[in-house]
Length: 252
Ligand code: NAP
Image 1 (cartoon, rainbow, N blue to C red):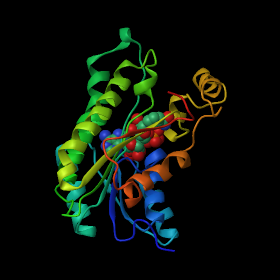
Image 2 (cartoon, protein in one colour):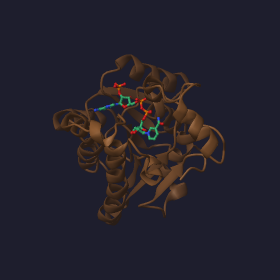
Image 3 (cartoon, rainbow, N blue to C red):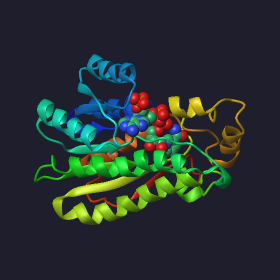
């Protein structure tokens, strides 16, 4: 069977764990050569690469903080060196730290905006230089919080609101270059990051709330998200750009 992404090169930011690791593996399983970016967890990135290679795929790990322009330049220099071009970018690296309005600090604001918004822009700016005449696909990992408007998440939700509108603006700006830009907006997904925050544990009030409020009655897993990234990366979605797709068990 012909693989959907044969001959394509993908960069996935924040692919040492969680949603990014699953997306990297699904893209590779469809034939893409994948650059697995990470910030600090080399062990996690090596595990993602090893899982891809074990299934006959191709991948390399490249360290780099998306919020630092020099690191981002290095990420794409390594991509060029290894694979010579780029067709797919998944802007997944992100952090979430929920807080009430009264607990908002400059540090909390800048940390989340630097990674989730500035980082996404720096990465995208460099990535488009490597896209060829045939264009490509950019997939931004936003969040269902942008329609749920949950209390006590104001800074994080603001970063993802920015990601939604960046998706729309860049879809128009990059459309003439045949670069499509879409977003995936996941609901609560069980990942290392969500586990560390305590929100996915069986006793968590937030998990119980999702299980009650989501029409599908459960929280999500990384393999609920990754196939949609493959769809958005492939020609199956070739006439689609500027969309935000909620994958949240029906919560909106
Ligand atoms: P996670 O398990 O915490 O993993 C985060 C990944 O991002 C790791 O690979 C981490 O690298 C990387 N990362 C963090 N800061 C970075 C930086 N400055 N530069 C490069 N990489 C960086 O997170 P997740 O739950 O999979 O979330 C992934 C994305 O989905 C985020 O954008 C998040 O906002 C979004 N999302 C998650 C959920 C959810 O419920 N889990 C729901 C909606 C949206 P290291 O391991 O090296 O630090």
